[in-house]
Length: 143
Figure: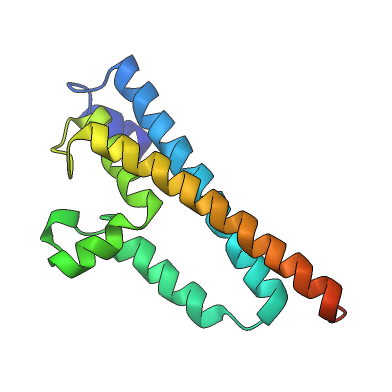
């Protein structure tokens, strides 16, 4: 599959494009790891969060442009998709590697990705601190 991807992008592929695309991907992964810390805290506190996991799994697959083009989604779903950090990371990777049309000017996508990383980091810090506070008060003896 990697070779087929290289064959299809042979005209648009460049070292700069790969570097910027991988940087966008790394920022998306960093934001998603903060998302993971939030879910880990929720799992430790509530134990039964599979319904929420299912919702976010579906959202990541359909609202980020992973399976269907993002531009075909109705505007309310696009707004939800813009809240997920993987949307801009995937879009910028496609833009830099395949020269597709970006969802918005690339500078705004970089800004949105950095803001999402910052927001997710603050939320993860808040949720983990909340978990620690609850653990001190109630204990996590069921683990």
